[in-house]
Image (cartoon, rainbow, N blue to C red; front, side, top):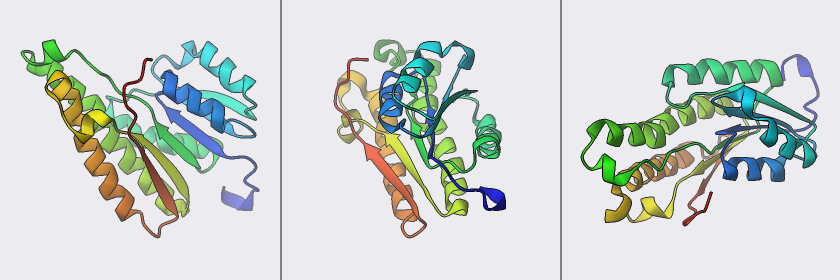
Length: 193
C-alpha cells in the first residue's frame, strides 16, 4: 500500500472466478482476506460470492475479466492494485477444454483453445509477475495439467497448450527466484467440474 497504510488481510484475486477449482481455492484462502473474483459476466457471480463470504472472507468483490482480451490484462491489474492495494495471491483458474474432434479439422477452434489456455495465461502471468516483482512480494498459482506432462492423442490440442504453459511457468519460477515472488505450478489429473 502506498502512504504506509497497514496491509490488513491478504488480497487474493481469482482470475476465472466462476471456475469450480477457483472458487474452492478462494474459500480456502478466504479467512480475513479481501477476495476478488474476476470473470466474464462479473455481475452474475452471486453464488460464488456467497460461497466465499460464507468461508470467512473480510470482503468479496468482483471484477469483469475477459481472458482472451489480452490488451485488457495490464489495465485490469493496475485497477485492482489501485482499488485494493498490492495483490498478495493471484490464482489463474481460467481455461477451456474445447472440443478435440472439432479442433482436429477446425483451425480457428484449435487456435481458440491455445489462445485461452496458453497465450492469455502468458500475458496475464507476465503482467502479474511484473507488478509483484515491483512490490517485492506475491504468490502466483498456475494450473497446468497432467495432460501437459505427456501430451496424448485424445486431447493433444489442449495438452499441447498445457505443455507450453508448464514450460513457461517453470522458466518464470526460475526467473522470479530471489524477487520475493513465488510461483506454484499445479498439475491436477482428471477433474470433474
